[in-house]
Length: 301
Image 1 (cartoon, helix red, strand yellow):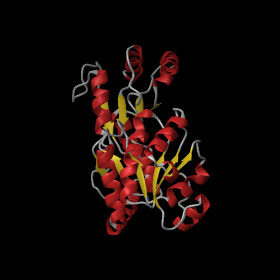
Image 2: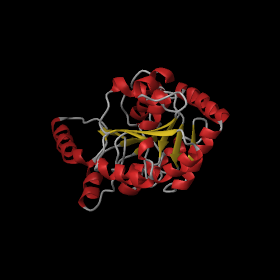
Image 3: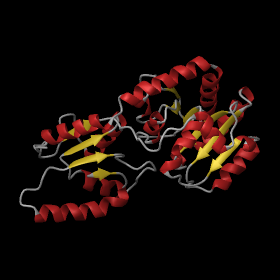
Image 4: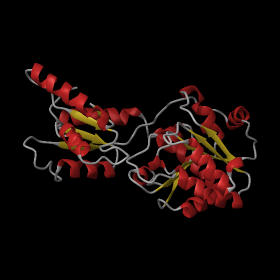
């Protein structure tokens, strides 16, 4: 079962109860946890409800050490599987490559977006939610512009908060003219244009488990500057395709972005690292892990 958000909790509880009631020999249940808990912290009854759903599993596949810790704390499990009466197993596997959209040549992508060849383009991509820290990136942006006057910040994604408040803050900082805001969900066919036009992807997250945007950037060959939260340090541990900075530190974020833009050799090395990383993020590894988990739970595939 794929597990994302507590919105599905009651539905899953009903379906699982029906399945157990109708099946003479119900199969072990493996959850593929994209997030154990939601990004906007669950409280009170939500935590209880999430626990009731996830405790019905015999196995859980998570994508980071942060998620594994959260799962064990939620279910009160020790390293051996804990207090449950039946054997329980936690598996760790990477979030595989999101091969969405065809990569597009830089020159072609920039013509489509009205950007020039000399623009230095930073991309912020995905749903704009409080935990993703777009406001922190805006606070960092004046410092970036002082060092790199030709920098452009392209913000692409559906806003969960009024976009007007971000524009107002950008205007008060004197950086609105350097922003390009696309406030909508963009279709797969256009992904290559936005990623192809950029020099760097910024992930200024306040918190995270993992990030689906990160493997998407790897697919399109784009290096990353990210905050060291949740599973991001684990994903970028090699340093081959990205740079990590402390969370909630606009100055450190600005410094990292400008240092990469200041050093063409570093940017080229990161692009080479992204290409190597791409080769190791195929789906076959995740499939093999699911098969191994199934075998560990006594299911033949």
